[in-house]
Length: 152
Length: 152
Image (cartoon, rainbow over all chains, first blue to last red; front, side, top):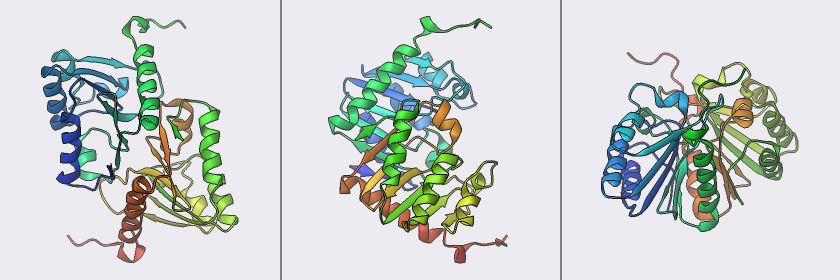
């Protein structure tokens, strides 16, 4: 199902439905995450026992309305970059087999006001490189590697 | 070829090569376009006789380093939104059959410093909805519809 997202609830409902179909795992790789509805969906999956892992951009995770604090408070593992560049991905992987990717940041502004697209694919040849990228980032952003006092 | 874009020239070269493979048409639907290299590639295609059409976001097209003015100067048709929300897509369609889409804005910052992804697909089921969205936007942003003095 390819679904360039027109504005409105229909495409958003489809996105929510696909996310909520997760049974075992959910990887989120999101530049910005401030949509309360999507935040609730992710916390619900966590409570159902789905293994949720999130990587996000450091500069954006502290912005007003960010869902990242609520996710961590709920016990969900979140890792963030330590770079000047942006962790600009916006993709999710459901049960290691469904890739949800596109232009959409998970913000209310983007959902309600922007022209955006989301592509949902299940072909392994498309999903696998994103899974690999997630695992690379997950390790790279491991907190044991954070440098609080970078060398000059 | 799915290619989540790691930083570096290899993935960027692949992107350039795919773009330069255009023989008949190139549709660009880009939130931000300031990469000189990509700007040169698009102008080259235009000079070769490829029909290039561009839609972009009004708030971003006037930013420093934007390629939009150069494209228009070269005779390429560009249309932009008139909305408060962003025209946030970042996709290209080559010869109506290859879709290039992802998180990457066509800026030097994004190419050099960010974590980004690009997906390249040729399956008609994925390409067609993006072509439809392009044609919808192209008509919607037709300059005859611009309102210079919006009603209060």
